Image (cartoon, rainbow, N blue to C red):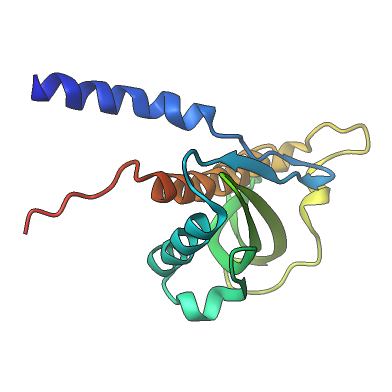
Length: 175
């Protein structure tokens, strides 16, 4: 019986992740998503989000840039090898980003703002995500994987926060 319950819980997890609103990168940027968190008030969501920042980031005191109790948290982060340019060989690019997480009763608003890009040697590059698209709205061939890779990173962070807030995937401690 225990095995059946465990199997059903793990089988339901992918469906749970699919119900979470997905962030999407377009030539106009990234639209924020509002995520419902049943049974939690704004204060509880705020406090657990602060705890998530402490656990999810290597230097939480350095990345936390705004902390307005029960209203908003702003985090500045960095993703190494966030996406790549296709050419004769793959050239990976690093990316700065900002998360703004706002709180209301039973929900939070997750805003992902793409910052600057850096080459693998740390040099700043002088363009932004808008160059991924042609004027007609189609993706340029050398950047066709970039939006998908950036979206995967954005949605991974949102899923991590949501899982932390709801207790999904919680580690069991036997000691």
